[in-house]
Image (cartoon, rainbow, N blue to C red; front, side, top):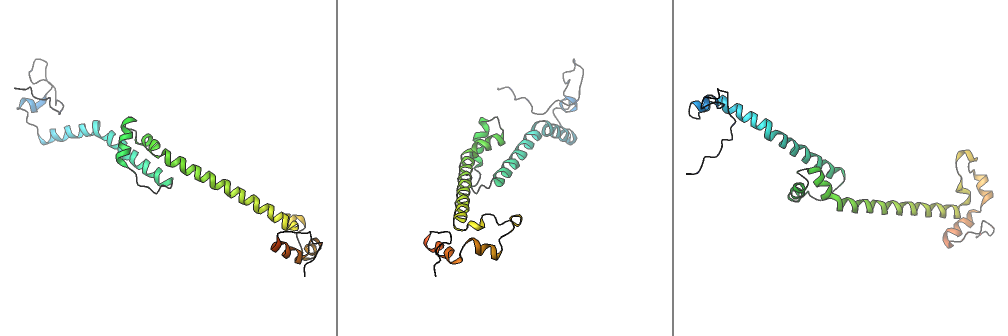
Length: 179
């Protein structure tokens, strides 16, 4: 006959070392009969010491990775099975597992954002250069520069030349007026 598996319940009470039921409390002395209070105490101690820290880590880790996923603007669903597999290799750390899981998508998003920023800067610089080329009087239109009044603007360039330049792409500086 195989030996009985050890009880998952801790010993209740204490007794003398010569007592065969020592360390097993009232329940063992009564033939492993536990009172509801004994069971409640055992369950509370077991959950508090064994399961609660694990549940806490699981819940906070899950909430953290969901927050990161949303904050990073990801549209894809989280593959929790894949995350669980990665977390096993990371000692159960869900946040570290998510970092590894999300790395390819994060790198792609960073590359896209960087390319968009470069394009924005290039477009901005091209627009700035075209404005200075076609509208030299508009280069400094701040109030501290004396402003560009109607009389001042008319002296610097001819309106018809500017319109012609917009159509042809060539600006002669107002020397030849197109009528």
